[in-house]
Length: 239
Image (cartoon, rainbow, N blue to C red; front, top):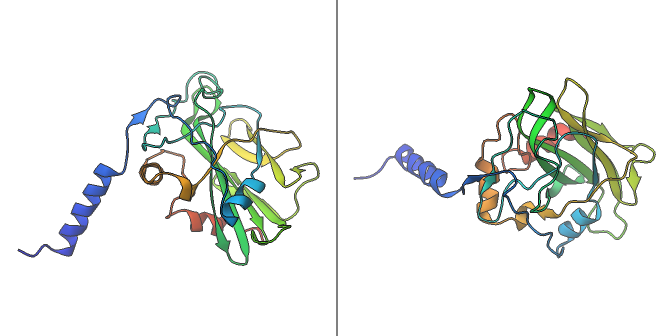
């Protein structure tokens, strides 16, 4: 009997849902990826322009997924805004993805936080924030930053002129903070922050990439999946 296209598509979807993902584990049980030695032009540019992240309040960034595809279950919006999420003993992480968008090279950096709380009972489980560094060309000796877009609630803070004091060499200084009663967002700062181990989208294991693409993070959105990456770049375009 010849199977219908709809039946085949359904079977494939079920198979994918059963094979893509690992387990959901504790937010502090997810081991980070080590930052690989950059080899390609795009990897070298991503390391060169990796932002510093300063945490003013709330959680510190955590790994969202491990090599096996297990994802962190996050934290409920209870207790203190930084309660149980002041840093993982298994390392931190920033995720990256890059590519041409229009006539600029876009490097997206994304951080995961187990919860997003303004104060007691305000907020939600899971948070993703991201920034896009727009440069002229990764394949030149002196690449220039053309603009920066930092996630701010459902939109972006966009600029083609980085504020004075918010650039340390080739590294933009970003701040993770909330203004009560709103949730957290990224903004420019003059305060030095930390670098997290960078793992690019193409450097992830298949299991990890599949889990990031299919896991339901509730009110938060992983911005660099195949579906969302170009859509986010469209919305973040600062020129």
